[in-house]
Image (cartoon, rainbow, N blue to C red; front, side):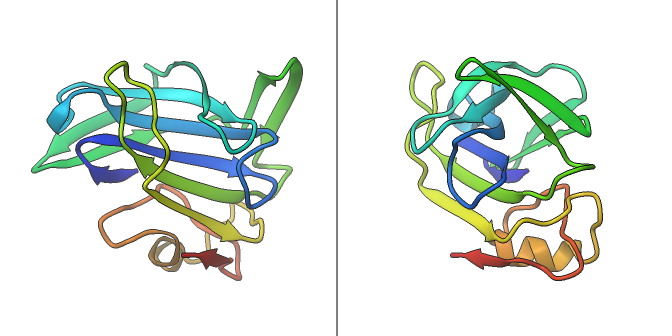
Length: 161
């Protein structure tokens, strides 16, 4: 994910087009102005409320700030399980299709996320493992200053702007 060097960028996979009831979420946040400290966290969404942040991710993650642009790269396992509201939930990209949710916003003094200032999502789930047109997906989902490390299935989904 790439964006402004202050605030946060988040990416979630969801079985529907909205936040929750159980979405796998990853947050890259600059905890100081200019992105001098970047924290990458695993989280989940249970609805239209702030994400439940589980823990910082320190392996398979790279981040940098160059000329006011924050870049966060991560590797996510094919299958991830988390406890959401007392239930074990698994997001397996080899067995399920997902919608992609993207948001960005400001970070509080304590490092928490605020209500997003930018929000986008795909319309229609797609297979994340069968990228046919990554550039088209990125151009539909995100403004030109952002990039994502994944793509779409044969027919790119419609995106809410």
